[in-house]
Amino acid sequence: MIIKQTVVDQIEITRTGDIQVRFGKLLVEGDNEISCQWHRTMIPPGGDVDAQLAVVNAHLIQMGEQPVDAAGIAKIKAHAQTAWTPEKS
Image (cartoon, rainbow, N blue to C red; front, side):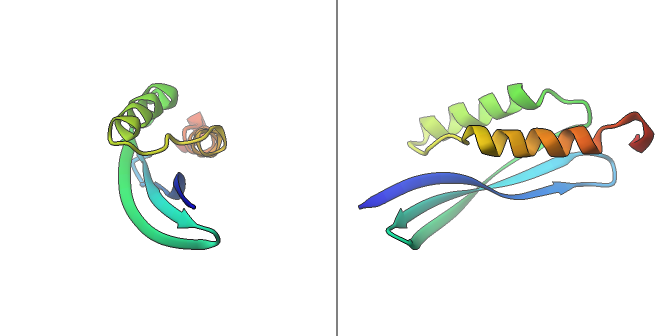
């Protein structure tokens, strides 16, 4: 059985504090990844992570893909909290 998944593949924080996220839109059969395409977004410093990921999820669903799960969203939010502290601005 082939399963669609969307996973957080890469999180990059630029020197200006932008968070760039690459998602893998996967097709998985058993333990084998048979396809992967990329989907990306960027969140500026102090940006609304929840709002941006809601837009990403709506777009993924519109394309027939799986949305980013709660664990992936939590991972991105944790990076944002670490990157966007006053002492790092």
